[in-house]
Length: 199
Image 1 (cartoon, helix red, strand yellow):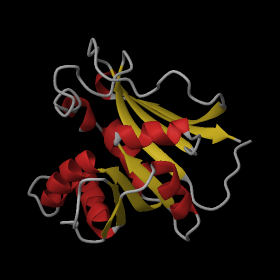
Image 2 (cartoon, one colour; image 1 turned 90 degrees about the horizontal axis):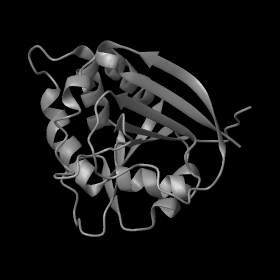
Image 3 (tube, one colour; image 1 turned 180 degrees about the vertical axis):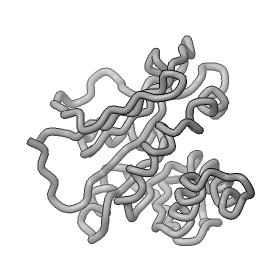
Image 4 (cartoon, helix red, strand yellow; image 1 turned 90 degrees about the vertical axis):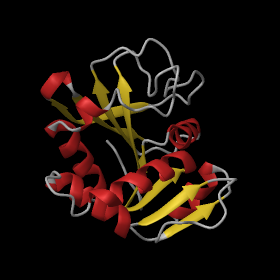
């Protein structure tokens, strides 16, 4: 049985079928994700994650990418309503960006923190609110997995081999069990999986 006390830490990441989250030659090039990210399965998966969340936790690189792009989707002609709703949530919700190099934040409702990830999450979990959602920030998710602080692990599996590049699951992670809470298969072989940590 899964038990939760207080806020949940929910992480979301897209992975290739060979277990990579980025291509080897250019880790920030996410073009391989795009044909799959715009499927109904991927959009509905993301919607189910952000709706119960009241805080977005991001690394600096992802913050710059997400917060540079998503606000432009609000009011965009022809944009999927689910994309617009996520974009509006991202703008309106409290955001915490982990960075040792970023000074003042260029984004509204955003706090920049230069502290260890596990410490930041422990502080957030001590406050009131909904889920703490980590959006595709690999370095943050890896640190939380290593500290056994992930309560819900959400994955989009896309049917492509990248043939190399960084993996999400490093050797030496704490042992533990997870329970599958939802699974959805869709267009192009996209698979959305959600696992809850059994504690």
